[in-house]
Amino acid sequence: MRHRGWFVAVALVAIALLALVGCTKKEAPKQEAAKTEALQTAQKPTGKPAPSGEVTIFSWWTAGGEAEGLQALIDLLEKKYPGVKVVNAAVAGGAGTNAKAVLKTRMLGGNPPDSFQVHGGSELIDTWVKAGLMEPITYIYEDEGWLDKFPKGLIDMISYSGEIFAVPANVHRGNLLWYNKKIFESHKLKPPETFDEFFAVCEKLKAAGITPLALASRNKWPVAHLFETILLGVGGPGFYRDLFGGKIAWTDERVKKSLGILAKMMNYVNSDHAALTWDQASGLVLAGKAAMNIMGDWAKGYFTANAWVPELDFGAVPSPGTKGSFIVITDTFGLPRGAKNADAARAFLKVVGSVEGQVAFNLKKGSIPARTDVPTDEFDPIAKRTMEDFSKDELVPSCVHGSAAVELFATALNDEISIFIQNKDVDATAKALEAAARDAGLRR
Ligand code: GAL
Image (cartoon, protein in one colour):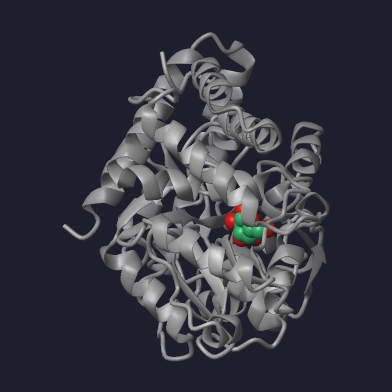
């Protein structure tokens, strides 16, 4: 029961994926053959001596919290396998803004990293697995006894054709509002739960000369991320799933209402948002220059990496209107075909999926472990609440972070929302999103 919403979400993603398979029937036979070969020739461990040598791990984790989380995994791997040396090939830019393009060049140019960060769902399956560029790694799950350790909904997001293709490092929650406790206390404010409360708080803060909401729009994704949370807040999880599942038009009144709310929010953001990245915007909250931001819980990783204490210096509540719903973002790692040091890559994957790895990584990253059998005592109260919510909330996938829709649409959403905050043209944006959904095969 508790994962009912999650299964519906996963089913919708699966339907979208099936639709895509239908669309790509005419693939070249060579590509088909490569796929079949990839699915059949899983590089099974050979029983050789312990892995050694350089192993290249690719991600976009360079900001505060992210970098520390990645380092915790690297440290564990190098401690466990002293002969292994990690080449950290991270490419800066939140949400993979720059990394995804670099990864594409490497993968298509026959120079894959040994393992890379990829979101579960469409980003992993449609972009890499279906192209025959990933090795199935179900045998690692069998060998490590992991098959019942990760929630079924997550396993479904990283599986294709009966095989598993990645190891989830975490679960991030996308729909959280972070607030500076000192500012809220000194202005006697309560963290807002609804859009009305949110705008009332914004008015008070603005009148007091404080920037209410920190925003970053130097990259397009943080605004699209904010918009995704507004869609969920306005329409609820059923609407959200149906919208990304292609059953509801993007010209729907609830989409237009969400755009209207985004336009209104723009009256309360920092004037330099076009110059800032997500972590710099979170830095405004940290410095007391802004009171709130709406961001995934990698923001918590950023705050704690900067010595801020959860529940003392900052608090978190579900973003307006989204109590009881949970936007799931999962960072996973897989094994690309042709990895130069596949043995060491497999050792890395085992560390990522181990109890020790899940704890060490998530304590720094701000997310919660993907495994459900991990001791929770070291986690802060916000993480503990997130774990509880994950077990009972309506779970929905993120589009901006690669799970809910194919890359073509996710990119279009980023583009259209970034144009929208300039022209605030609700009707034109809704129409453009509907056209993009049709172009991407999300809607027919
Ligand atoms: C997300 C990713 C998170 C975090 C964030 C900001 O896409 O899932 O782990 O890194 O981007 O970079």
